[in-house]
Image (cartoon, rainbow, N blue to C red; front, side):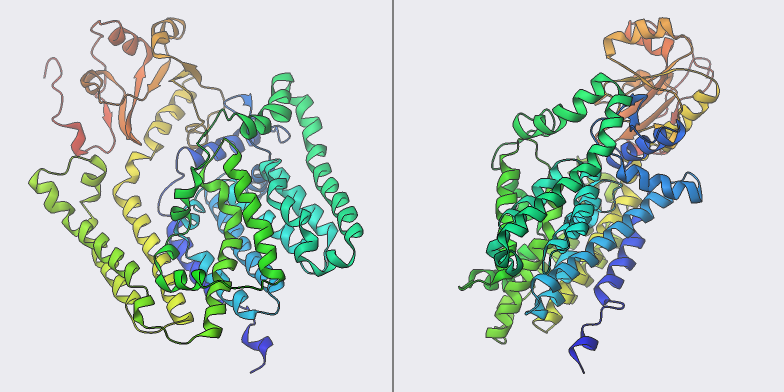
Length: 563
């Protein structure tokens, strides 16, 4: 069999496996607040207002994001109508493109080591965090795709036009952070690229022109958008968003070392495979151009992200293909030097973790019956957890099957994918009611038809706009402003999010439902104003709607006057 036919990627088994699992997972529940719902809210407001230049949220220009992802959502809506199926399919296609592009990058960077390109996609698809985050309708996976495409254009014989287009697409996805992801591989090009070494001046000259071309794509949107959005939007778009996050973050500020422990989250399950640790710790010189490329990309980029004050785990997602290539290189190099190694280097720690998780799931109902289970999250999960425990026992047994090398790699990757899908299914069927905003959105959709204004106590993140198809804005108020707002809007509705369920809400609120770690209550504005003033409001015409209707945390039904 020729090398070409052996490595022909149509269809690659790793991609088929990933497709099966991701399509099973992504449609198990509705859009997640606040990430997915906020993205959909911005896309909906742009669509509804026929305003495709400046992103908007809650009636105001939205300077936090640039519009490429919203435009891709609009493209599907133009064909299929407004729905949330297309945005999720779009995420699947973007994720698949990211995996395929990462595999192509591995083939090009390690052209003389085909085993690296063969192994790297398996390392990438198995990463639990990136799989779960990829189920969100968010910007990072699209950014990660553009980063890989830009580096793909940079490696081998540079294709500067494609590099400019990929950089421009990344800038239109997440703004100037795209430049951070590609800057160091470009700057260190002569260290790792044969073509850069052969023509240093041409490399930097053409690369600078390509970067300028990519930036021109962003500027071509940003200048008209900045003037259309007004002075405040223009100031935030051009100055505060990038400078604020780099120097003194106003959002997600973390200490310098914060990413270090988060690496364990990003790299699960591979941190639990002793054979990989053994391969990584036996690193030896000399290093080739492929390894130099990875060092040029991963090390300085990670260090700069540590220096930036605004930190989130998902900011590092675009680096994961490089990490997967590094792990694949370490394993492939060890396989060429050694055979065997014994089962002590096998996946038994991951199997033990699967068994321990299965035991914990199986024992949740027992702990609940004994009165020692005080977390409502665990209480809710205990209804279905024993059924899922059997699945994790099966995965643990699969991880203990004999076979080393690539067979073991495939088993771990498959077990990780199905394990994450099982955990996600447990969340969807036992915990998602804490995130399902459809009941509240239905109330607000009805209020919109009745032309009743709406106020939100605290900062509003756009969580209701798409699901309720709201066309107006929601007022943001503080709890001390309830009375004043109610007097100005006697037909209005107010939504608030108390940490504990107010017993008076059971009697007088329109709707109560759990929301994340708090409660969500919707009130008639005059009723809530009376309650906050210490008065007894009139008995409402209808009972308080409860979601879920038989949820154990509501306690006993409230008696009403005259009953």
